[in-house]
Image (cartoon, rainbow, N blue to C red; front, side):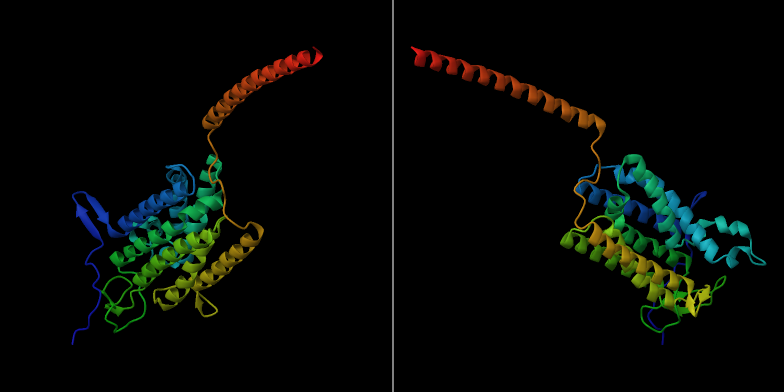
Length: 313
């Protein structure tokens, strides 16, 4: 009896003439565009300017890609630098292998540079981006489906993922951990959006909530995976990373709420041109006010002198 299962694509590449369209790269790019688009909507709703999110993303995205790749290569160095492996493969990012922790860490550095250049507080920008990043991860995880990678233990569940024979993998039906994580990210994004609207979170707490929720899901999903990984005290390295980052995110959320409650009133400074224009308008209004006041004062003075003359008479 054949069991129901989720099929895997026969190939992760579509040849469009001389240009190969790789499913993994397409999912990453689609996720980035969604994150920037939705982040821009949230930023404008907070009082920021349209286009600012994209300007800062120009710094954050390249840094994030480099950071994600570095984390993957460092934590799985045996795939590239052990005997019989080709170290050049470490640069083949289109074949898969981006560590979210490295992407967030180095991406934050790029975002900080972009925010500093615009005079914008990084926590406010991160809050605007948080749910969009979760949605982007949900899309990006489907890149692993195209590459037939990062699946879990064997299963006979009807939503099992069918994996074909290939390099470093055996044919069979396995838990689709990529799908579990994708669905978890969508749920986390929706919770973050709800919490932000309900409690008016600010000063980086929206981003901290997103990080904490993602880590909570990544921990149990990572525990199900069967791909090669380094272990520390019996747990996969990424499980430990999830635990540490989760604790840091929760600590930041609690401490920030005590030190800086509420939400930022202004997220983006007014440009000097607009500020000067506003100042000129105010000056003109003051001049008009002074002119009116002088006339009133003169009239009052004249009335007073007339009254005094009448009293003298």
